[in-house]
Image (cartoon, rainbow, N blue to C red; front, side):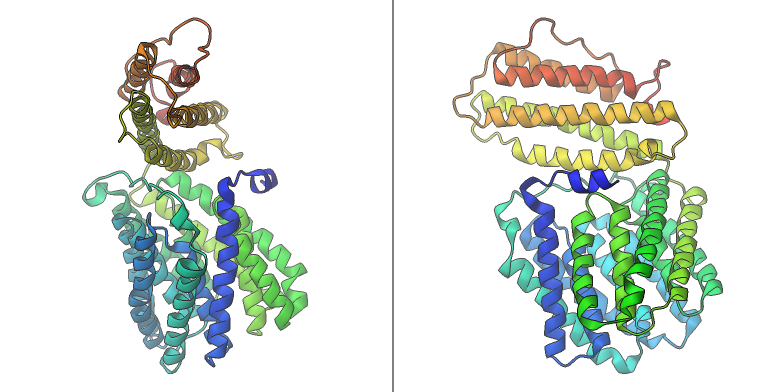
Length: 496
């Protein structure tokens, strides 16, 4: 886990810039809220609103990100008002919270913007419970949210908009469907059911901090699709919380809310949340837990008993998510694996075709967007196969085959990147051998996705010409994929 965190590649220092900008944006938001005269509670809600604005908005274009950021208060402020108005009406409050959970997950069907607005709506209700918001505090909290989102936008779109110099990422859409066949619909039902369990049991554990259990259930469902992914994420959430609580006993409790060191450590936690999010959910949760402990210290309520209670509520939330994905409209892991692997393979073919067209002299052929899409799809494949390669998975054969699939898909991506780099050279040439190799790649992809026999790659020594060398390497990887994707009986990896 440490190796994955500290040795994971960071092309273009994207994660480093993402994390550094978050510290700057959230710090500015807190300072602005302080200068505006808000209390410590206002500064906390402002900092959390800025964190969400910088973390959850993932539209493909800068313009889209700006629009989504502007819409965050439109969604969040009414939810905040409802949470404050229902503070003294537990039944109505709980039912409204569950409705926000279901609507927030269902909104993912509209892509990154729906996901961002759904997360912001949920977290606004959650923060209202965290700060025990009442209607008399609404003006201050409204001002804090608006100032914080504005400060985050100034940093993200004005002072440090590094995305303007980068190609727009391609976010692959989730598998399609209608009604209960749509994964986002099923997950909305699952999340609501799991949150209902967490809410009831969480209130039995604590009448004051029950919302921690609901929050744990909600975040387990974020960025997951199948029951296997959700179970692995739940395990990692509990593990990260345990580690964070252990660190809290060593750091946050002795600090006892001291302002300056708590603020410095909170900034370090923010950096850690953003820097580790893409590579380790466990480490991200460690940072989130320690940040929460520091905030409770600043609010004067941190104690060892509170840390133990957080662990218990997190366990309740993870259990609620596990029960929901296992028994409420389950989405099987093998179905999701199959869908993402097939889409990645088809994208390999599309990348090859675009690169070949570029080599043949077609000026408007541009493989770069396809390569970006392939990277996104491979990320989804890794996430969907995570349950199979998890250290606790007892099925050794499936684990070994899943790791082989990931290795060969990474080989495909490496050869594709090399081919695209060659195609970008205006001096690169195209000949009949390259066309034949592209045809064999197409045939191999069709066989792997359609169940046919993968054609044997051309024998002979490796080509000296760079484009052909990359295509031959791609042929080899695709040919070798046939074995791990299918068992000896012909069944796919995901159903073995």
